[in-house]
Image (cartoon, rainbow, N blue to C red; front, side, top):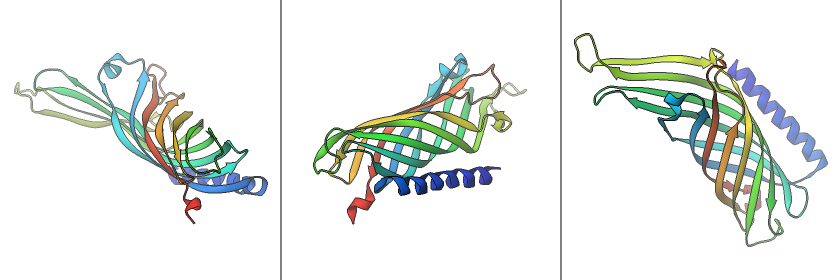
Length: 226
């Protein structure tokens, strides 16, 4: 299932790129690398009150199409981890932990606006954003902890997978990404980015978890190097 979804997403992006190449001027290609802190927002107080930001690495490739001297269209495809980590300390020696481990292939049709001529040199402010469609590659919810055994000692370990994509977790996610930063010459963009998901990660409506993240990114406009 995951391989078929992955192939379909890549085919859609390639088809979109080919159509745009025939209609718009391709300026350069993009490699984007980001370090994010991911978490969720939702209605489970046991989780939300004990969340810790989970660091992940996001990578993607895309193509820049100039629409004007300031505005460009940047369709990108990303590998994007999401989820959360939470831990409840029940006693000094026992705890309950929950780790939601989600890995997506994102299709991101972004728009990028440069304050100043994007074809000129120098450092300029860049603002970009757009919707995303996330297709789950693999995902699971892992429950772990340390409890009191029948002997009255804190040595009873807990470790099991409570849900997976297609069995407790929705495979599809969607939302929007926004970012602001600096474009340095015509080669690199650096800045901060924020992402918010709108589809419930859980397929049970009693539990509502929506992905979100904040982080830093660097984008290399590598066609301009040659």
